[in-house]
Length: 277
Picture (tube, rainbow, N blue to C red):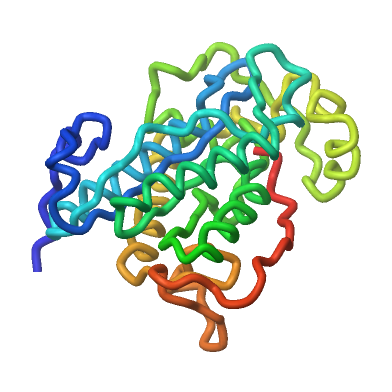
């Protein structure tokens, strides 16, 4: 069987639609969520947003070719990045502002969207995202979230993210400025990182070794991220934390609910440590 045809990007961009066009039929809305934060001397401040938007757009194009009605919202480009505020260019709106933004965004979009998925590119947003989606689902809104995470990835601006950007936006990578940062295991760094920020553990803001990055690896990583999101969107099962369940990783005893139903009981307030990336 041949792969599905892709739908052209302008047809999927919410910002390029007209209101009557959006209002016809069921719409699944993907919302890329990123950050504006330092990514070492070689990667752009918008790295997390670039990854989230690229993954969401690629998945939407494929789903559109399969006949699904999917739109991608403009990037929510500011997040919870306080650990990076020791570096110029970082703009963090913090937990409370991000939480309010996500909740009000979801409440408004769900007046017309039949489903809404936040596609997160920054680990520091995870605890806030879980909390906001918890509120929205408790209110009965068909909202879930997912993250552009990769097993075995380094923490921040290292081999993983640099490889991805070499594939997605090679013109934005300063290859002449690539240098290794702190390569200690993240588990050793987290206590001090959380107390004092990234600057305290890495002079250049890099947690990993981007000198090992290649565009070939970035191509494979990007394909994996898109495939993971497609797997999740094809099933649309949601765990009790509000995250889309990845079919290949979900065990037979995992709890899942349909994205169109809210979880029962009081909204949980469990936090997630996230990642500094």
